[in-house]
Image 1 (cartoon, rainbow, N blue to C red):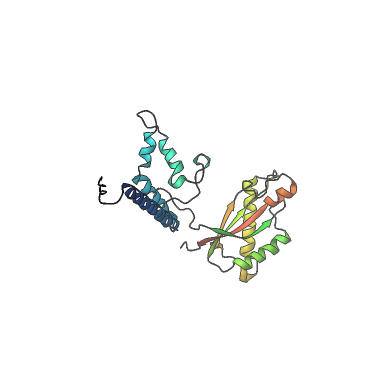
Image 2: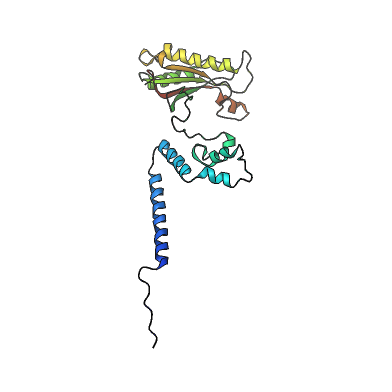
Length: 237
């Protein structure tokens, strides 16, 4: 009668492989959960860059390129799929997501405010900088809403694409925002007058249309002045 051999002590080899695979999957899911909890864009981008360097993303890209010399555009291909150039085609203007602070030391902040809300909008007759009675009524309403606050105000003039009889579109858009400024500073009710220190003037001419139609009604919507309230205090703090 044959004697059955005892199996080798220990667990089967497939169990070890299965355990390693489950450990890797668990680690992967933990990383996904951790990444979803990161609320700050700077930390998220820093983590992506760290992972890219740790896993050798650049070297792996270089290894599949034929020849001994790495092409000059290989780094652009990396940027197009990683880090700050994500989400949009880099050849069509790149990415509007704010970059990591400190990455480029020569970048300067031109405006402290990050966001603006529209305080109001008044429309003009095409080719004219004159305030109508409706404009004056609307500006009094806007002044009552924004008077006495610490935020900077931008008065931004626009024109339609209709040719102007005198000067050019830049001059006409500036005339409009200047007259709106003078009205808010001098002509509204005394309690609602706007402090000139809060005001910034901007002329956009015909280059920021809100309606691209060619008819008179469409063009009329572009002949306007917008009053924007920035999240920037007068003292720059």
